[in-house]
Length: 226
Picture 1 (cartoon, helix red, strand yellow):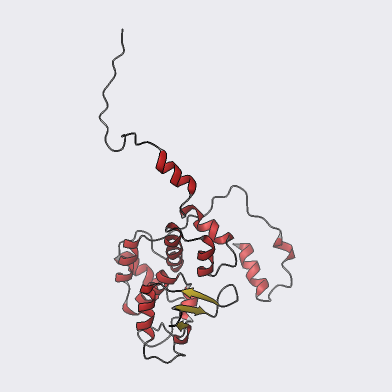
Picture 2: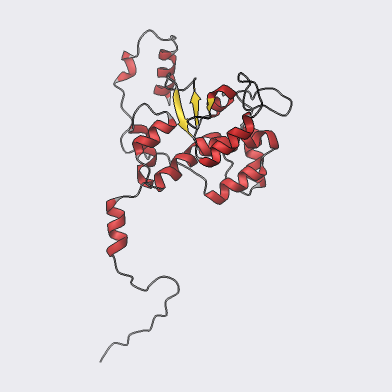
C-alpha cells in the first residue's frame, strides 16, 4: 500500500524519482487478499434495495465493471449507440478505453440518455447535482443491510462482480483486462485466474468416480473376527 501511494505521488509530480522504491518486492509468503464478488441473486437484491438515483450507478457498475470515478464522469456523449460501448475518457491508466455493453446494458444506457444534452452527466442525484467523490459508501452500506448482505458492499466489489462472472463464464483474461482497463493481464490473472475454467479442474471433475459418501451415511460397525 505504501509503494502504491509513493507511485501515485511520483506520477502526480510530487516526487522527483521512483528509484528509491522501484526494486522493493512484496513480503514473501503473505496471503493474497480474497476477491469478493456478489452472486446474481445478491446483485439483484442490492440493486432493488438502492435509492432510485443511486440504483442507476450500481446497475452500471455491475454491467460494466467501471470504477465509481469513471461512472461519475460519464457524459451522454460517451455512450456510443453505433457500437454499444462507453468511452471512458478519464481512466486510471491514463488513456481512454471503450467498455463493451451487453444487451441489458445497452437498454439501460439508451433509456438513461434519451433526449438529454450530449454534455450532461449521465448519472445525477435526485437534486440534479453530480455525484461527489465520497457519496457512494453510505447508500451502499444501507442497501447492503436492507438486502441482507452480511458484509457491507463497497463499490470495488461491484467491479469485481463484473469481472468474476466473466471469468467464470470462460471469458479470456486478456478480454477481461481490456474491459476493466488494466494495462496488462498481470492484475487480472492475480485476481480472477482461479475462477476461470481450467483443464485441470474439468479433467478431475469428469473422471473422479462418485463414491456415494455425500450427506448422511449409515455406517455399519464391522465386528472383528476371533
